[in-house]
Image 1: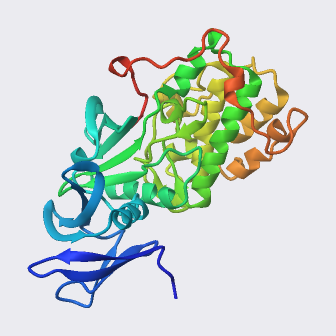
Image 2: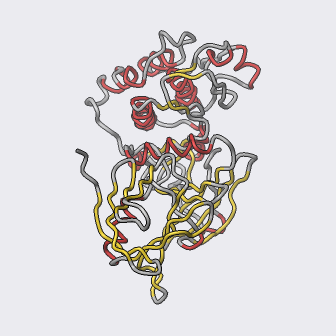
Image 3: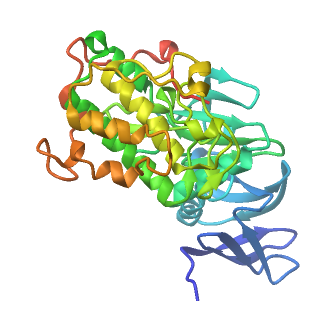
Length: 378
């Protein structure tokens, strides 16, 4: 028998107050003693319910209860002790949608808008965050990927720590990071990043990608714009808007210049396609240039590998990642075991702190909120 990860009692507010027991499991919440029935079961993946958190009027930081909402309507209200409600909120974060984000964060500015989503910056307390609003039919799949990563997170993947819902949209709340991989490379003269820094960046990217692939998630849109760096230079892969659950798919998507050849040949798309895209990123880290000039070259498979790559291990790994045949292309695990990482340079699994290799031109400094720009790709 599975034990709940949270268990507590609350008062359901109706014409007469009713005591209920709330049990939270990894995949569902069960309310026992619910008015009119023995129990109410809320499955996190399929539910139409979301929760609005109720705060004490005298102190908006003090939780006093919660309300079950459906299609934007407040339906069932519960109250309880502050510690109990706070504990419930903490355990439901990232599992179940919350309602009325305006109640908990402050809007700052719009960042980006497309036909499929929009992104804006918000403030929670003193912390900068971003909200990605999903507006198309793929919203639930992107949400599922984020829910899986919330349950099994990885330091090199930026997922939604919690999300909000209303009758028509999903709002993914994420940490705000200002610097893209392109911004970082531009800090170096002629975009020449030291090989030790490249090694650390690629290792973090591969470890994040290996985590995705081990949980049967294909990213499908790896590119410079979808890689951010935190203030302490931790690498973060972002944007699961095109991601697929499973070991393969026939759905074509991606960004020109990074797309694996099998996508254009109507072959099955697998995690190996992500490795090819990461190979393009690796080449750009090494040389400052991609392997294609445009989409037409990408479609025709006319790769241009720079002859200026002097590190033999780097070049060998690069060619293994860019193999035209996915059957012979490396996996993320293969890449991490390559001599480029475990050769004479470093001990196995040794990580290099990027802050030790800051640009010789300038150390990155954050600007005031009003002038900050984000590179959160869609």
